[in-house]
Image 1 (spheres, helix red, strand yellow):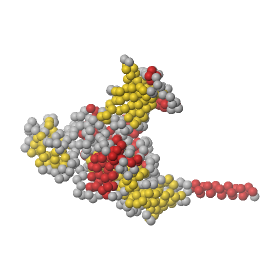
Image 2 (tube, one colour):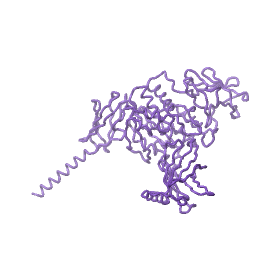
Image 3 (tube, one colour):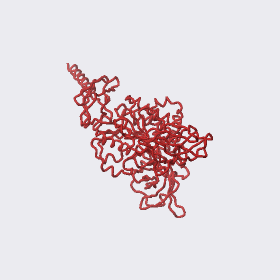
Image 4 (cartoon, one colour):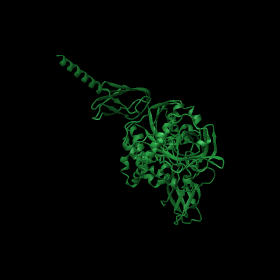
Amino acid sequence: MFNNVLKLVILFLIVSCQSKKEYQKLELPSIISDHMVLQQDAECVIWGWTDSNKSVSVSIQDKEVYTTADKNGKWQVKLPLLKANGPYEMTIKAGANKKIISDILVGENWLGSGQSNMQWGMNKTDSGKAEIVKANFHNIRLFYVPRVTADKPQKNVEAKWVICTPENVENFSAVLYHFGKKLHQTLNRPLGLILSSWGGTPAEAWTSMEKMEQMPEIDFLKKKMISRSISNDKDLAYFDKIIKESESKKSASIKLEEIIGVYDVISGESNEYPGVLNVSMDNGKLNAFFNWQKTTNNVTFKLDELSFNYLSKAFSPDPFTVKLKFIDNTVKGTINDGDGVGEYPINGVKRIDPKKGLNLGRPPYQSYPSHLFNAMLAPLIPFTIKGVIWYQGEANVSRANRYYKLFSNMIIDWREKWNQGDFPFYFVQLAPFNYQGDIDGVESAKLREAQFKTMSLSNTGMAVITDIGNVYDIHPRNKKEVGRRLSLWALAKDYGNKDIVYSGPLYKSMKVEAGKIRLEFDNSGSGLMSKGGSLTHFKISGRNKKFITAAAKIDGNSIIVSNKMVPKPIAVRFGFTNGSEPNLFNKEGLPASTFRTDNWE
């Protein structure tokens, strides 16, 4: 009798536990959370995970929708159109479990993506300090995706929505912030700004593997990245072990003779850059330099800290500042970037034999095809957005001839994955820069040309910034104007402001007329104009394919180009070099895109 009762009690407990377990699971992606913005005038997608085949309900604004989770527990609903503004509250139920999402606004959601010029924080820009202190906008919300990689698509990412405050915007994308601020103030609508970017990354990293497989002409990228993944795991393990052991030791060397030597180092925001540091005494003078620099200045060793400066004009016209401390045959410190704002960690281990170093080449996973799509975009899909702004291309300059195919397919890929139709996709054309020290080279001009061609895709647009770049700094600091120019496209194309001139002149066609070439343009606005005198950066060529400087004059909404040395011209190039800063604008102050009429190599 007692045994039977005991069995019934145990059975009851098991059933009860199972029943409770069934309803314990209700998960949401991080982008569906407090302070989020839902897209107005759209059937917003809400999704999550619960137990298989469970009923789920989602309610907001006195509207409720229902669905059932699939066998894997995934569920998804579309909300009916919602009233704008807010704040509102959303309740999600799955069985006995419930989640309440609060402080929801209904307005406009824009995603900003790309590499370092999109990532570039407010605190590093020309007007950054003045703009940051004024950045109190309760109805602008920010979602900052962390920089992570993955070899397979991920379902979630560790991030959260925050309200736009000076503190929250300080390290946020300046381009995306100024773009969103302009829309917010013009439209008087809540704005959700989603940032997913990583400096130095190529377009293929942001493209799904499914789409990459459809582009056999760039299959070499996958093979190239696989070969670069080989590294010395033993050396890396040894390095990490020595660095970790040194963390418990606090006393840094104060004797100069103890720091002299050669060190294997790793630097960078994600510890991705290996190198060598050499600290030496040369003819009684202290010297220190990394293998990636050419000159060193202001080398000092005071108390327990070694400091010095070096130039790297490929990244900044200003010197980088290095500060290091040496602890038990290791080195730790920071590299402060040229503008004195960003700091990057550096760690190193002293070589036992100065001529025998460690192989510390960590695979650059952030540059691998699809790795950023998998980790930094897939978790956001299918969150309903209005559109995308994009600032990237520098990392693809060396392969500019393949960029049009890659970039246009990336845009198509995103639109297919989001399944929201051809949402707006506006991008920044590369600024002039002294790529590889060759200001007259044409590699980046070809990439700008590929960006121009990408506008053949529906609902795309391009902000030209040839007038606000810096040929000796790959990170132009005037991000406010970049954001404004992108906003012009959105305001004109997506929000009904038809009177806005949103683009500078774009080459349309050419015609040979009596030894001269007449060029026609779209987007001339209220007329063409030159800034600072006669038109510059026009070149002309005959059949010999040799381009020489040409005279150019405005004739209505066209330009006539000529040179007496070319009596039978057949082609014109405008600003078609790495560092060109031409002066053709429309009267609204927007610069013309560079171009060429030929397709010669």
